[in-house]
Length: 219
Image 1 (cartoon, rainbow, N blue to C red):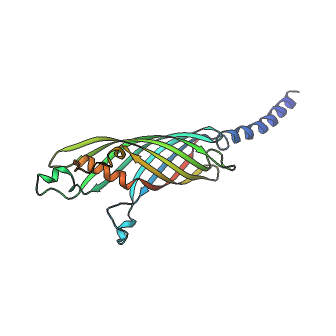
Image 2 (tube, rainbow, N blue to C red):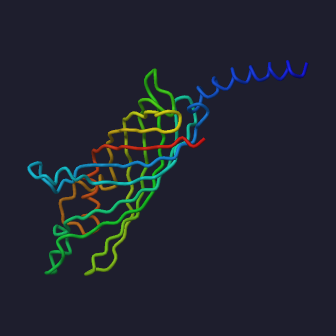
């Protein structure tokens, strides 16, 4: 009797588990570890030079969690560094022999919500749209003026596709539109300081871009 009950319970479990796994997550896995690479064109280079193929990049390791049949949430840590020409800043009006290239170092984070669309999509795979909030602390070692720092905020709207490989890995592609708090200063035609010059450069470069991602379905 106990053996029959065990076999019956086992068969019921086999029927229930696939149904549950297809409702949320992939085969019962809802937690994903991933690394995103955001890429966009460097506006300093014209289309006539080979340097146009060297993109601006932001590296974003993070995690994602499936919360429903077609929805997920996630967070990431963002790292970037790039050079820019500060000669249009107000500091260059009053000093000579200043460097024509400075580097902006940024660290920050992101929070996002993702919605899977179309009939064949099912979190965590398929076509999706995503809304993301970003914030970063930026540092510039200008030497002549010391260490400059500021905070930058932004939002991204992304459309893309998540593809499952086997039962463990996921690769993703997306294209995005992103804006930062520099959006509120775009009509200001006056000279800006070094920090705002770098933030305006970031805004212009990452307004539109693409993203690739590699993820691991942990559990």
